[in-house]
Image (cartoon, rainbow, N blue to C red; front, side, top):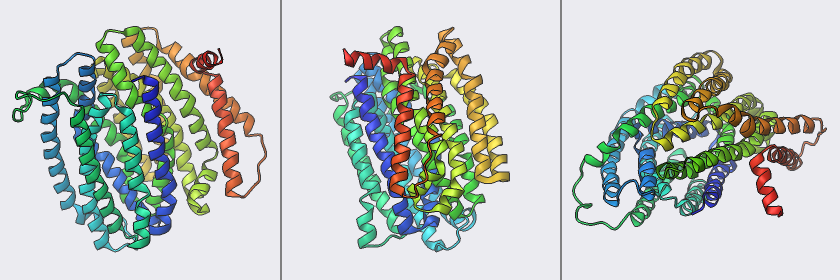
Length: 497
């Protein structure tokens, strides 16, 4: 399957899943209220934090599957690795679920600042959240295997279907049964069970045909062979996840559940930047790993540079639009001018930080493909050593705004100081060319278009007209970024000829 088709498929599902979640958020708020939405934000934060327990095994499964495709390991090793990881995931999931259920009373009564919601209903919802979180976490094991096989068209279609069920089909239930927190999270649990079953079935249809040796009982051997790589991922991802969630952890206790809901709205809107960059990694990692296994260094570097420009062309316009029109976007989205005013400054900062974050991920892709994450671990540790205390202090003193400033500054420092070091160690004199030709030209083109379009006078108070205005400006900035990309210009010329 071509990389282009895989990227398109990944983008389609990722964009759909993110957009449908964004589109449905105001509907949830209208049915459930902003305070209840704060608990949904808490649920999203718990899902992210639970990824720490992955201990690096999900990306390891994706990498080993890609290596099987490249001929680096045999079918027996791959199948036995999956069987071993399943038992590990089930054990961790049970322990995690029990811990969250045991702490549900403390979370409902002492951690969250609940104002008007019934405490009993909040506690029951946390129990349902615990079960949903662990089931969705296990789904990651099967998703990584399917991704490693590069069956991204099927996976994208499946993700679209599940997202529709999760975000949209809850509305008829709200209308017919009710819109309480308990009903919402019970429905999410049901969808998570269905999702897990279907992903497991698909994974086993892709695996090589089993024989007696592959059907042996659980063994540590296949996990042990990949343990060094997975433990490095575990340490770095654990540090990274905690560092990127520490602001949400602190603010979930510091803010009222209503204010936390507004903060969640801003962060969710800012995630639109990552929405357009994350699908690249899903398609890029297995392909780069396969090229590395085949010894194709030229192809590996070419894809690395082209993917950087592709992310820049799409990410930079998204970040500039969110930064410059944050209040208008939040007003259109939420329908609430007060929420838009409160959340807009946070959205600006997180959107800017996320643009930088999209590019700091690229050296990780390179190290992942080469199977050596030592430098990534060191960099993540240094980054977290700065980010965690700065986020903590800023959040405690200035709330969501302080967290936003800490997020932007930390990401800029990491990108400017650590990324060139990684490139120098692995690729030699490469970073300057990558920074200027693959990012800076595109960024300057987007900024120039933003400055020019900002001179256009617009006074309409209609949501529809404001939406068309922002979309039009976004298209202009997008075209400017395309013209600033050598990769995009080359493809345009090929299509013309």
